[in-house]
Length: 180
Image 1 (tube, rainbow, N blue to C red):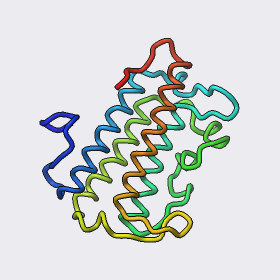
Image 2: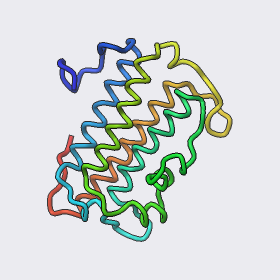
Image 3: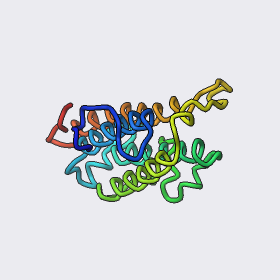
């Protein structure tokens, strides 16, 4: 969190103005995601509500995998395959494979991965300027998208899954997550 507080979107040292605003939003979303899982046990992280649900752990791994995928696509000009993500490869697509493979981990494992991926994102964003945000390339179904949209989508995806995480936590634990 910046010195000015978590609810101020604005300039940040080391980033151009537009990127700073993006980073401000991404930081808030990540802080609230981490708050939503604070104190969860490995068993709670592994809880699957039904045969089509993902676990909280799977969703946390997915959030990290999506960010890593977008790093490859926007910073390094390449797409990542699930195999590129090593032992976390199942997280990119979620589903049955993720339910099988992403289990038995402690919360610190998920948080370390999220924080490591984010450190790379912040380092790379610090090397770019606001003009980079406007760079456009073909995206979903060949439609043009700029880097600003792509990184908005990274935290939009995290917000969506944070809602699922809160819902799952309320069913996996007796303690409801903090609300913001």
